[in-house]
Length: 253
Image: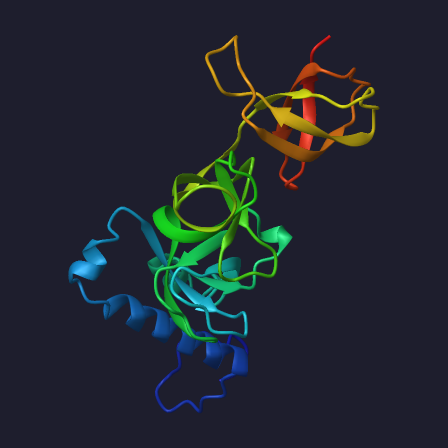
């Protein structure tokens, strides 16, 4: 059978499948079987609030339950099989990189290297998060780490609950797909003016009732100022960008 490797064979026709076509067929069969054979017991009902997809682990290493994989592509493309593509959302996952911000899954079950398993792509789930600052409300991928996400001022997931207090790796409940970037209010308290095109540390002032905020005893370091010189002890508004860095967006005159 030559030409289109995915056309249907005729009776008596000799089959000559390419490796790509044969592997795609196996992936399609595995994805279909995985979706059909899941039990419908209490474990499955527990996750009805989340959006679950099939994910093939192409990272080269086993990934534990609640591990993180960046979305690299799909198991079955429309070119491979339109029917297979339309029947299931089935993605391939790899070791997260910075380019996977906003494009990742959290594994609902352990997924061995090369295997297909279930994963959250949206909704509410448990996951470990590296809390970089106590005030962070969002999180996203941590480059080269398949075990956890990293908190920030913006990200693709909102942190609904975190274990304990302070910074470091914490178990959290997050809502995937509820990302954002909150404006943080604080003061630049350096000893001299904050020069344009330099970075500085901003002290967060978000406690108390506006407009009488008080210090939150928290600082955000390496905030980038691309706009104008800012005198010391002035109010500022800063916001995290998609690259994970905070930028000055407004300052007291």
